[in-house]
Image (cartoon, rainbow, N blue to C red; front, top):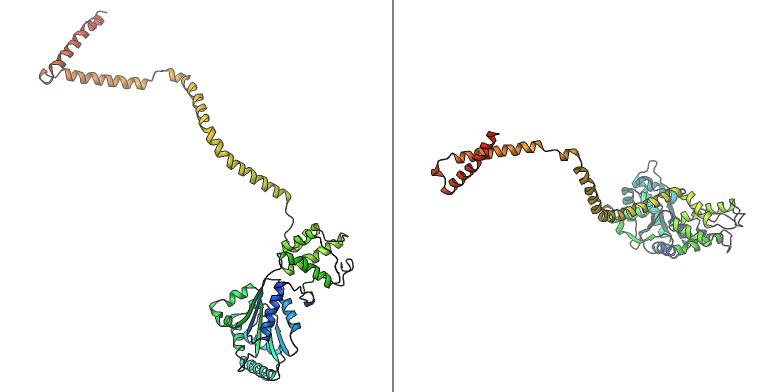
Length: 382
């Protein structure tokens, strides 16, 4: 749709693993070199891992194009197989006839061994490529290990290339796969593109598609796609393809940052963030931070004056109430009871014989009684 609009011969960002569009970054050159080394040498297992969409399959397709003509290759794209299904698929890929009507594992292995010995005598080699190898079952991996026992006195007859995601490394590192792991003669983990490689990657694909040296993406748009794609080529292809379609729809001559941002949201399904929600969260966070800092200080400086003010306001009200001026009858009754008790105790002490009291105490009590008698007489006369 947009190819004619931008003067391109074909879509530059298709996700099909076309070796013509392979951008040989430093990482991809190293990966391809490891595969070629494993094939040309007396290798057993060759391992290539990487995250989803980093270009493992494309590198392998590039390897197949560079293999010499005397190499027979069997490719398995769906490794969800049983051990006997795996043997049957290998024989079918290599066009090996199995004469038995109801073949067993031994029938397939015997036929494969005869074929490998014959092609080796003719000066040919055989390679088996298994994509998505992280989905292989343990018994299937064990069967592959047994196939590497097909050998002569000088070299292995079958070389196996395993392509998979990082889970494959974890699988092979397990204790049950130690024998398989020890037979890996070449391994490489393909990393995503670096930010500086994304610009070259985009221009390389545009140039292969017939765009020449035209710059259909602004610098800011390229920086944005490098950030949101995290350097994964498959995501770069999807986002850039959607961005070119968006530029065509807007009659733009280049993909701007705004168009690239919109394309990234559509491809990654991130949606458009709400400005109100972001502002509300930001304002709320700032308010809570200010309150958390200011409240302890305000309480420290204001709590003592506030308490003093409350005390001053409470005391006048308490003194001005009518109840405060009325006598406390309960307290007066307690005082009278205590006084009566004291008088009785004094009377008991006074009635004691003089033998138990000292002379000074006896004289003081006598004087006190004499002083009280005139007062009592005055009361009686009244």
